[in-house]
Length: 414
Image 1 (cartoon, helix red, strand yellow):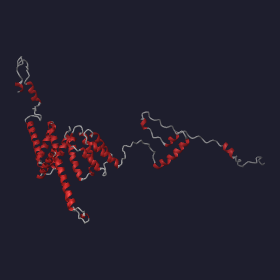
Image 2 (tube, helix red, strand yellow; image 1 turned 180 degrees about the vertical axis):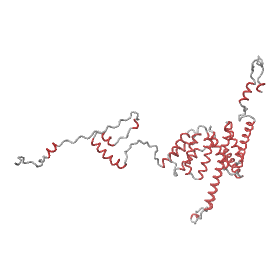
Image 3 (cartoon, helix red, strand yellow; image 1 turned 60 degrees about the vertical axis):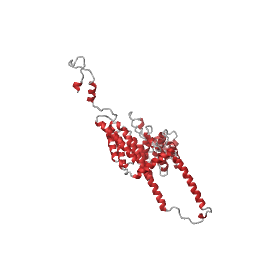
Image 4 (cartoon, rainbow, N blue to C red; image 1 turned 30 degrees about the vertical axis):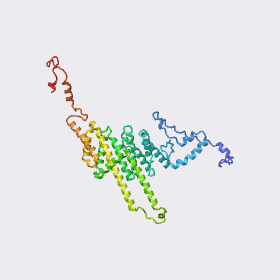
């Protein structure tokens, strides 16, 4: 007999879309995220982890703003491959134009020659050097600044500005490659005044010995003085004496009068100006110009050589003043002997000064050999000092010397 169920063996009918969605079970909830590891209490607050872009977007108050920020930051992070960092940087240099640097150098030049303002002006010049403002376009003005600072070479050895001079010229030594040869030679002379001579006033024996070595090398590099050098020195001294007495002004007035007379004579020789209509030949040939330039270069070389000799003589005098300090005496003895052996490299007046210095050093050497110090006092050891002290004391030992203590200690101490 057939079954009464007509739908036996058939699949169940499909449910409607709405009923199927309502009848389907809800998906299981996502597993909870693992809790972040607890931060150690000992970790410094200054070493916090850098915030990620996702956390920054979550902490934002507006979801739209967070989404926009995330969309903008995502390409940058992907492009760079790292988390962008924010750093606070301060600008330590100021980009100044060439004209501003030149004006600053000119202003410093006008004040750096004043000893009371040198300290502040030299610090401003140091700032220009450290900022890299000394360039080929401004090197001429910078050299003029140094020239104004050394307008009086003796001022650089004053105790109040000694350290400032050393700092300025030691820093300027780093830009000497921009100087021409003449400026380099002049700068070497200034270094003897401002750095080497001031190193002789130090309390460091190593610095003192190094300065003495530089002086010895500079003396050995001097050429042998000739008769022309002696004549040039005598002429310079005579000109200095005349300038002090006022005769130089009279000579200048006479030369101006003669020049005016010669000019008037030349004008009267061509009253109609016909020479201008004729073809002129150059008044000075190239050879004559080269000869004048060569002569000017030789005069400048002789002037620099004289300045170098004067600077070395000044260093010798400053070293001789330190002879009273015991640890400098041996080094000064060697320097004085070297200068005396090279006395032929100085001019006549300078030779007399070197010989006088050496005689003074020899006299103090003889005192030291006889037991006297550079100050003239007797150098004694501890035993001799105690011997001198107790030879005038009244003592008695075990009452055998005399109860009254009238016996002296000369019998025991010699």
